[in-house]
Length: 222
Length: 249
Image 1 (cartoon, one colour):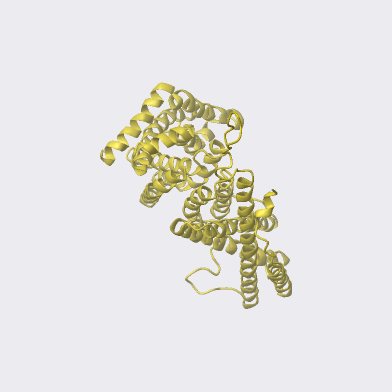
Image 2: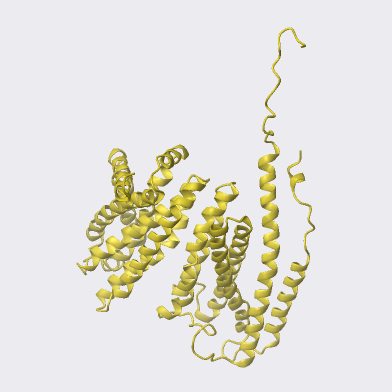
């Protein structure tokens, strides 16, 4: 019997290998997110001070909406036969969940970093809080990855799965969006960001517990 | 065989309709009897439906969470039916609370919608439970459907405290809690009594709706099962006696 950590590594490396072959995150979702950041000024006007003001919020909105696509991609692209085969390998369902979420977490970190650069360039945003920004990036990526993997597991291979998962994930990711935007705003206003960071940590922990606990029952339902 | 022939032939109860009508009438009479608010005038009567609707949304989603947790524990489909019945009622009353809030907001605040924390989070809660109802349409397997939606039903309830405490955590246009708060209630007695009557009437209405919706959910489940099994051959039905050359024994 291989250890839990080893099982997590196996699943995560499977998803990373799949990404290396298909390039879905790097060559499809990331350019799509960058296009969204490019389209907004064309729609609302190119007033530079206004764009500088809305840039950070827009960045987080794009991360949330397009990040959903990243966090659900592995699970929703799996066929029923692949899921059955994975179940028959005897891997711990919780390890499968954590493994998939780990891969998504890594993809989302890269996604955020790349879009962050695009936002700085296009919107002339000057990032503040060099200690807080990485913490926020990590918590948002972890939260979205856990939530997306859980939601994709809930919907599984049911009807309208690909369309339904974003509907479930987007509203439930609100604590992450609020935490990310408010913590950075608090820092800018000279207030403590601790409460917002704590809210994100609690959200991430709650999602991790929910995902691990529900992994086996969800696998049993097929 | 007709699929519906499998279904139990129990008479549909009519008392929930009567209870719903009485509860609606009580709310209407109470809200029309009390005098108008000194500042808001007749517009304040909307509150006698808006506030109970918001309360019912909390209650309904709380019940959905409890019933979902009970399903995960007991694996009894009756709990799943209670969860979905409550979620549907909750969605209807959340929509009602939002709609009436907007009607009240236009003459009061000058806009139909404002980016207030309470309003925005209530709208998000509405979409979360719409997602819950949509999730139930993804599969016809009763236990798979119940299992998946039960997990979401437990998770989604986090929205309720977020909505309720949003007016405390953020400085919002929406007024802070008037009744569900630790401090003494600062409200005119007549208005408070009317509000309590409306909340009680709506709670009774919710109970009657739950009864009716659970009954309907049971019939839906029975119909689904009968449709799935109606055309299925009985085990062994496909086995045909092999033809023997030359016939006869």
